[in-house]
Image (cartoon, rainbow, N blue to C red; front, side, top):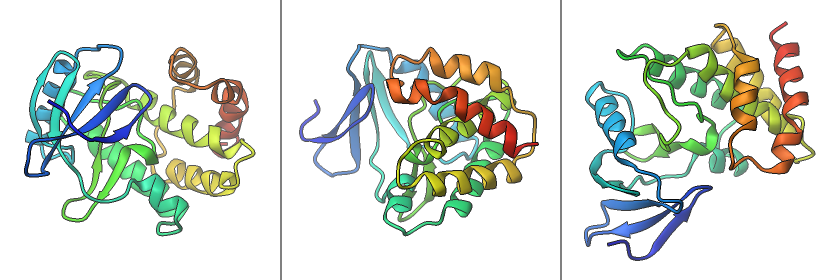
Length: 211
């Protein structure tokens, strides 16, 4: 049973779990089944990819390793990480994922879903949208599009997002399935109206930076 609330995402809440502080329980608010996601995470862990360890999953509940350290997004906002290295890190994590058997793709890999842990280094979280047998070009395009949405926004860190986007594209120069990524992003019920409105300009920016 979850106890104290640790964090709240767009689709799930995360609670303390157990007495040793080593685990958290993530619960989908809409009742989505977490068992498929847990199975994929376990297979990725067996292949050596940096994901949280999974202890158990049932219905909307997933018990997994509690990670210590800031997200890459928090580190960027705090000035502890520079945009260009962040973009290159996202590219490496994508390339490493796509090289694994089974063709896994994350489809939501952005700085908020990378934890900079104290003991394991970067660890990728939130595998709710992940698939096996997916297209790497769609995965890369999704990451690029999400960074571009910030880059074309009025946010004070838009310039940093553009720099990170450029570094991501330079470090992972494979094909980008941008129309498919835009459709998938637009269909996401958790995308905000501002993010949806920025999709056209975001796609144009990615195309401009890739020539």
